[in-house]
Image (cartoon, rainbow, N blue to C red; front, side):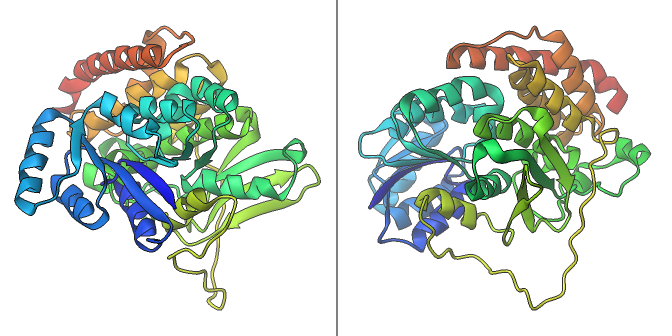
Length: 391
């Protein structure tokens, strides 16, 4: 039986992970659930899965959860904060860590899990976007197994099993195009938060949905792919595929293209990561090949979506550029969601933050987190400078 720690159990990937566990009770046991502030959902998960330990964001949430658990008679150990997240990720009884916390908060626990040779299902983009060099060096040094859970990288992982890595010509990642695929560029300045959150394919958290609308999320995925599979940015191509049925493709040097296709259901890549290298039946819809379908593919518009180009440039720059990129984007997206910044202002803030914050090579998690904070502060100042234009 595989024992799990789930980082981000109440988020979209976390809840899908719990559903996979629910369908495979004989195979998995939950050691720890790590969540933020969603006490109601966390309580439901505790009652159903009976973890040994629960970790929440802060002491206030811990006390609130403890009081609610006392009423219900449940008594798992309760802790909070970064050190507790690390502790449940490296615990001796843990076999597999699902890294699904949104943001840089998931970096340290994931890094330490790798250093302790845990198998990791990686759904936290910031782990590689902010700390790719450090993390992948740890994977190599400690021989840890890290399987990507994002649908595109999971698809790439599957396609790369079809041949030798040295025979690969390029990797192709697909993008839905988001809600503004057909929206004229001049209209983007006035789009609303509600319009940007109306994703045509996926149901996700607010930040990642906005990142999908700007194509920054695809930029992050290019960065991740470079680290995961040892690609140069020029060898990772993005293609817009609004049907979101083909998740990734690998072109080999003989011209053959291998594609990974499945329903848009995150439980498939989650189960793939949990059971790799085996393939077990997954509780997901199957493709219906009796139904006529049309799949479209088109190049992305780098002029309309400049953040995708910035992501390529940051990865080529090396050092901490992608860490700065991610931190600035998080602050800019937050400002847009709070209607303190227009949609096109997101790219402007990210670009200027990259110019203002000195690039250097971080050599520890602490240095990465320090650069992250410096970049956030620079981005906040830039947002404030633009605030009058929004009023």
